[in-house]
Length: 294
Image (cartoon, rainbow, N blue to C red; front, side, top):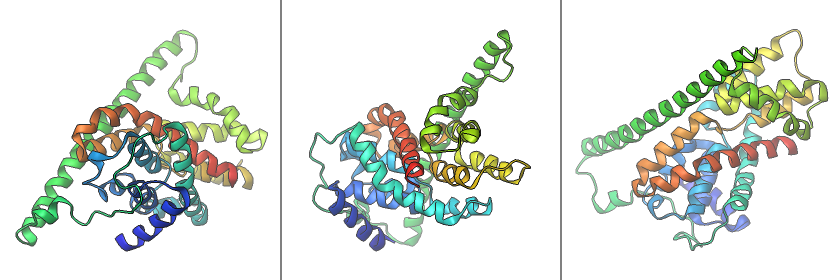
């Protein structure tokens, strides 16, 4: 897998002139996921520039992982749409991230592609297989615990905001005022520019809102329910929606990204937390770009 990703990354490094670390993470994200791709460069995360960190998160937000691909296929989503969207999102995420946060420093991995084959582990190798399993388990526990705490915090914050909005909305006769409802109308013009037929814009915009506030699995589940209903989306609207929803850009994943990268590079936690929301928005725009092209 490392050989495959290294050669795939070399292609994007030559094509788009990004650093080796950025090329590896962007290339790995569609296959191994948003957190695991960063783990490929574990020794380098602490010395990556702010622009590199932003791209690392953006590429994770703009793709899905191989582990959830089969789940979405089982929901009735065309496999070719999902795979094509993830691959198209690699250059899209690089372009949008660099427009948002251009590289103003000199990355350590500029000019070559680096895949971590142990890093500090090579200098201090485990004594035996049992020791290796133990160290790996501890690192996994640290990352998983960090993810759990951050995701719980983000989702609790969203629930608190929705609760407050619902309470305020009842005073004005709106009994279901939530972030999803607000974003549904915010995304209306965006969905129009994606090329969705006018009669179906509001329904697709609601799916985009669900994906951003909840997650793409909930949005794909809703899309599946719509397609099985008496009034399904047209083929054009369905295709655009399947591309636009194909990414991890949601508030829950925001907690995952902050948790993983902060565990890998505790000294950069403040920078990671500061640019995480920007990266999520850029990742969301990347999936919209692939949908527009499709």
